Every structure is written in structure tokens, then in C-alpha cells.
Image (cartoon, rainbow, N blue to C red; front, side, top):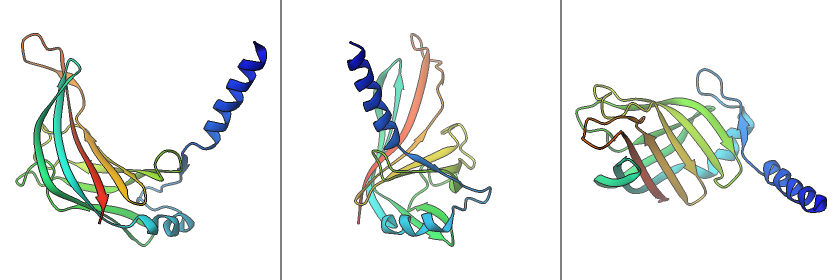
Length: 170
């Protein structure tokens, strides 16, 4: 029995060693130069559909689907940046993706980049303040979560909205 526990712990330890590694990001969203060159292979435009959904008491329901959603990953010096072809919250919102906040490399995705998000005039549509870009060589997943809140609908205690795009590199 002790051998099984040891083998299980060793396997978990090995998984931990292959997990994501946090990369130092300064207050301007810059990363060390040697990571910039490793991210260059992922730069480009990713395209897909942006799905907006909400879940109330764990039952997810789609709200909207935006086709031809595009996200471009690039870098300005040693600062990774992303831009989108549409305002994810609506044309009059003026929302924007800001500087890089955190970066992890390795693991199930080649990298996970978390960017600051400003909802502009539509703070009620997305109280989440981060856009997370999960990237690999050919695919990406982009998410923006709205924080859970109490629902004003009878019989529902909370609502969580999610903006999610599964993308392919062009």
C-alpha cells in the first residue's frame, strides 16, 4: 500500500514539474527578452466565433453568437499585446484590452496570457477585468468572465456570464 502511495505522489510530482511556469511580468506588461522570442511563433491572427452565455444555477444558456471574431497576438518590443476586430461588449461600449498582467508557459496550453480589460461605458455587461488568452501553435481560447452576482429572477440565486471564443490561427 505504501508503494502505491509513493508511486502516486511521484506521478503527481512529475506532473507538477511539467505544469505551467510563471513568467515575470513588470508593471508595464513587459516580459524578459528570452520569452519574447519563444512567443513569436504564436503571433498572428486567430479567428472563430465569440459565444456569449450565462449560467443561472448551473444551467448554461447561450445569449448571443458573434461570427468572424478575430484576435491578433503580437508584441511591441518585449510587451505581448492582443487586439480584437470588434468591441466584445458592443459597438458603443468602448471596451479595450490593456497590458499583460501575467504569463504562464508550458502545460496543457503552450502559454496562458492574462491581460487587463476595461469595459468602457458598459461595466454592467462585464464586471470581469481580465481577458485570458490560452494559446497554442494552431489554436487559441479567449475568455472574459463576468463575476457571479445575485439574480433578480425568481427562483435563481446567481448568474454568471461568460464571453468565450474558440479560435483557429489563420
